[in-house]
Length: 559
Ligand code: BGC
Image (cartoon, rainbow, N blue to C red; front, side, top):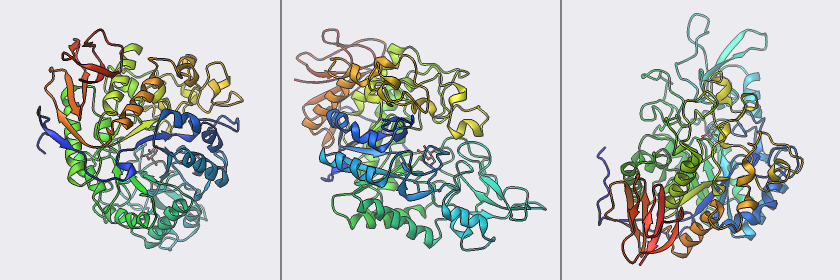
């Protein structure tokens, strides 16, 4: 594909439309780490309800909740055993209704995480499949196959799990003899559904309706590029897949297959039956923005995470290119671009943007890693500058809980505390994602920094996190929290979620553009950059030295 270049003077436009999700700032809640009301050390729905005022105060438009449905929690809830109920560790359906009402009362919409690629092995369908014969309708809801080799003791093909190790596990028959194999692109406790089966399709229409009827404003769709597998399940010709969900995405027989789009066209119609512009957002790791845009054609999903943006390093040309290309490619299909820097699967951007070595997105960092952040100061400065740039862009932005506090990745999670299945499936070779999932600090001097009334915390919190506690930052000029609030306020007041972006001339190490009357400049270089004469600063990610923009700083200004 041709390189997308931002030329000074060029104007790009956000695709038109008035639906709320085109411009929304959506805050990701990772329920087990947000706020724990019950005191068991795992966050829950009543905890979220109790902290809803803080989200309103922050100024976000919607929340997306990572899964809270019934689950044995082998992959922190991304292994669902019952799609129509709440796991007791998170509360009850009534707690969900109360949480949703508390959000809606404050004008905050609620997006639910849906996991359609696989269920938990504890799902009643999978248990029935294990108990049934090969070739039975029960087995046909999942992907069971006979093994290869003389005794069927070789996996049906060479696919690897995203979490490491083979993507197939052999079953044991009732009489103790080895049986068929089943496919799991993730952990062996997460068997993949067979989406060519109409029963699976109908079941998920029902699940969508269940949450839409309860008032959910939409869904974030997990592994949205993986549901359909190539006919015949051929070997991956390039050899076993690597860890990342984006790797081999242009050729793997399980990522981005054409048939997957039919499913979302179908779901689009289900959502359209409901009032209020309900939304589908694709978690689809694909190699190009052009491909990602296929998930948000007018009759498919409404948004797709812009992982191209998330994975862009702190580099001027790369940033210009990805912004330009995103507006272009999503614009072509009439969709808003989304922007995202952090989530529960990646190293928090405060840390990631200053790492001394590139670290694959789901490998994580731990005590043996060579990669280290440059310094806490550089990390904080880059994190703030990156967010100040992101929230000036047209489209919809995602914020991951804790980034408003400036939380870094916890790179010292003790090995014995780790929970990510990727850590165990690779025998500790990959640290996985626990470092971005550590429970939030709310108040510095309370047990578990106010996360839990008992002081319990499912992952240990670092001893120096009191400084990031919400109450410490609240109302304090210059804090990360106040910067986020200011960004969201100004973004709304100036309608920055929509409209055009005009690229501006800038020094070699700076990104500069105009949004109407508002000018934005991000300085990524080593030298300070002078603001133009007469510039009036609206906000800045760091204190300014007179009229010059220091390194790793983004400024919004006008005349
Ligand atoms: C989710 C992960 C999860 C995986 C399997 C991902 O894309 O974001 O947290 O482990 O899907 O469901």
